[in-house]
Every structure is written in structure tokens, then in C-alpha cells.
Amino acid sequence: MTKKKKNEICMCLLLLLLLAISRADSSINSCTRRCGDVDIPFPFGIESDCFLPGFHVFCNHSKLYSAGNIQILNFSLVEPRATIIQKNAHVHPQKYNNSTGGVYISREMDLTGSPFFFSIRDNIFAAAGCNVVAFFSSSNTLFNTPNGRACVSLCNDTNYNIGVISGYSCSGADGCCRVTDIPLGMKQFTSYLIHDFAGFNGSTTQNSPCLFSSILDVHSFNGTSRWCDLYKRYRGQFPVAVVWSISNSSCEQAKLNPTTYACLSRNSHCLQTYRGYTCGCNDAYEGNPYIEDGCNAKGATRIIKIQFLR
Image (tube, rainbow, N blue to C red; front, side, top):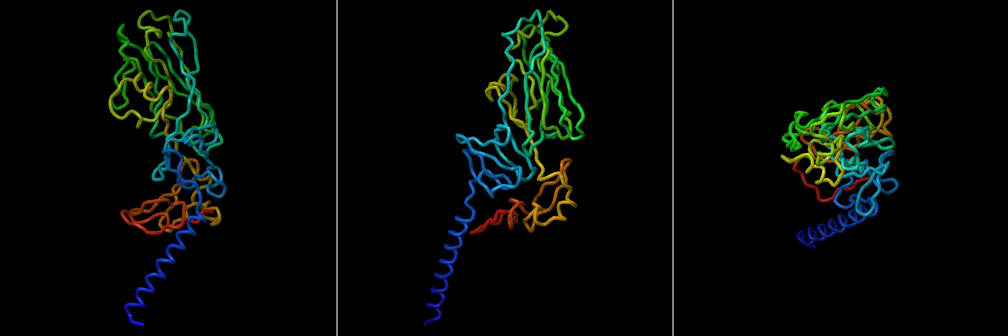
């Protein structure tokens, strides 16, 4: 047998081996990793043995949900971060008599039972409307103490020219207001509106083309648009930025138990958060730090990538 023939046989055997490994990978790693337009990275998963405890999600009519019927729009393992959306009650100004005023619940969101809590970096509390006080309260924060924030939204003319969003800013006198100081580690909030407070006779709530208060992701603005247009764009819902932790353990505590330690990739490291720890790829690496060999050199390509999920 010639050397060339031996090389050809070896090449065929190698290709058969790669094909067998690929088929084995398909049978071993049969986890659903996409729902509609959303990619589902581990530690999240749908089927049994496809997710870490507390990270179960489910797909319903091509939409991805977590505990508490929280719809997930996307994930980022780099942060780690996710964008969620949850349908909530909306205040319709035309339903109310502006001579009486009142306090109304505008938004309620509860992340209890999910691994998420509200991002303090990417969210603001915002309100729109003429002559309203907006505030929210929460007792489920990092320190488990009652907490809240408030702002006042007025209109400076009778044309109720609801302020133009430019870098998600507003003055409070142009039909919108905002609060950037979100309580640390918050998992639940209830937002309220007091409309037509103090008997103002100028621009009343009924003159407001839109009326809402909510926590929302600052990245949802994407340029300059009016606040009411933002509400219409998301059909009465707003994207909210959330982050997560693997557990309440510190990095030092988590590393003491190799069977549950989540940073499995050899090129990963532990990241301490204010509610526990998460994992990230080392510098010059990218990918998924929660799976073996999940962090690869940036720009590198691999023919086969077997992911053994525990």
C-alpha cells in the first residue's frame, strides 16, 4: 500500500470519526437553544437538565418567558444582562374627572421567583403627563427595607407639548420627568400617579396625550422621539433591563464546592455581584463561561463544539 493511499484512508477515517462525534453531540446536547427570535444561552434552558436551578424558561407561541410570566426579549452573557417586558396596567387620562384628581397604579412588576433583579445602571424611572406626581415603592431590595423615588411632571404651555426625548432627558416642566437613582438589588416595584394634584388650573391631565409612569431601559430610546411615541412604539409596554446572579454565594464560597460552581470554562473567571456571583470570559476570550470550553479566543472558529451540560 502506497503512502498516498494510507493518507487517503486515514483522512476518510478521520472524517467518519468527526461525523460520529457530531451525531453524538446532537443526541447528547438536544437542548432547545432558540425561541422565536431569542437565543437561549446556558445557564438558561427549557428542557430538564438544560438549565441551572432557578434558570428555567419556557417558550409559548415563539415568545420566551421566565417565572412570573416575564417575557424575555434578549440575553447578554457579557454583562450579564437581559431585557424583559411585562404587560401592565395603563392610566387613560380620558377616563377620569380632572376636578377630583386621585392616585392610580400605573405599573406593577415583580421578579420574585426568577433569577432577575432590576439593573441600576441601565434603567430609569420615568413619567409622562401634564400636572402629575409619579412615584414608586418597593420593599424587596438588597437590604429588604422600604424604598421609593418620586418626580413631578408639568406642562409649561396649554399645547401640552410633551417633551422631546434626547438622551432620555427632560426638565420636569415639559410633560415628563425622570429618576436615575434606582434602588440597589430591587426585584419588585409598584408605580403610582397622582394626577391634577393641588387643583392646578393650567395644563391638566386630561390635556395629556399620554399618561404613564414606569421603570424602563434607557437603551430603548434609540434616538430622539416624543415620550408618547415611545409608549406607542411598544404598544403600552416598556423594555426593562435586568441582571442576574447564579446564587447568593460569594465567589470564594462558590469555589469551595466544585460540583455546583458554575464557571466551567477553563478561560472563565468569577464575578462578584451585590446579590451573589456570575461568570465571565477572561480578557481576549468570548463565548459562554458556564459550559466547558465555552470561552474561546476572540475571532477563533471551531469545527465542532461539544457542550456537556450538567
